[in-house]
Length: 114
Image (cartoon, rainbow, N blue to C red; front, side, top):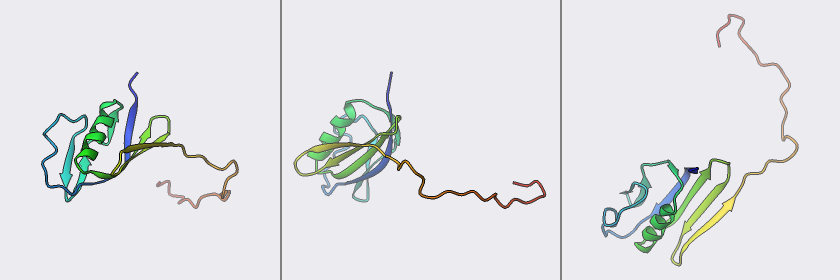
């Protein structure tokens, strides 16, 4: 079964003027915009080719991070630096008790309009 990922945050800078997109088949539709790399796809099926994209972009000078959110609520952060592509996995956890609780009734108009 395919696993769906959402691009939650993207901050990849590229300083080289070398044409890097279009010189190799890429899994996602990457493009350059004002010194940054963007992708037109914010939702995609997970595939190892995504990692190959990141490794290739890093080898061509891309630096920064991409944060993905998986369909089960986990987060994956990929950092491209001078040495490698690093993957960090995290989850959001909530405190067991609420920080605030609201018990008052909402102020509603009596004319039936929402």
